[in-house]
Amino acid sequence: MQALRTDDYQRLERLARAWLRQHALEYKDSAQRNPALGVDALCFQAFENELVGVLVTPLSLSLIILPCDDGNDADIGDTSSANRCIVTLPSGQYAFMPVTLADLGQRLWRCELLDDMSSLDGPDEACRLAQRVMQRVMTPTTVSAAVDRDNH
Image (cartoon, rainbow, N blue to C red; front, top):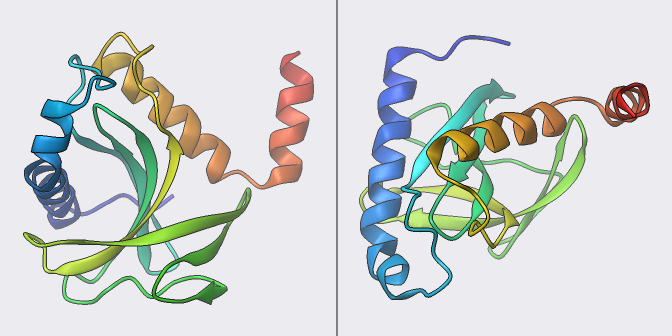
């Protein structure tokens, strides 16, 4: 796995801040939010000219695909349209929806995996969950199945 550059980490910080600004009212008004969580872009890694990682919010956990080049939209997937994109990652295929954050001025892709974060105790547990998700997503299915069998 290639290490991220300093400017990649800065972009991920901007992503989290822009996401929070755009969704702050939704989080404030939602009875389902987890007040112990903020918005964090976690565990991102380079994958085929994009950055893939997890976005944790008070309401959800999502896979995010962000273009590596700060100036271009993410252009990914096996089939894509204006409404969704099927992306093949090492563990399988995932359906991503396009998202444009006004503050960033570029499109990214989101695949919501969890829509209820209420059971998490806080940011540390969310970070551990993001690490497990990325390990599963970025491990080929046959290897994941063998690891699961060995752990049970």
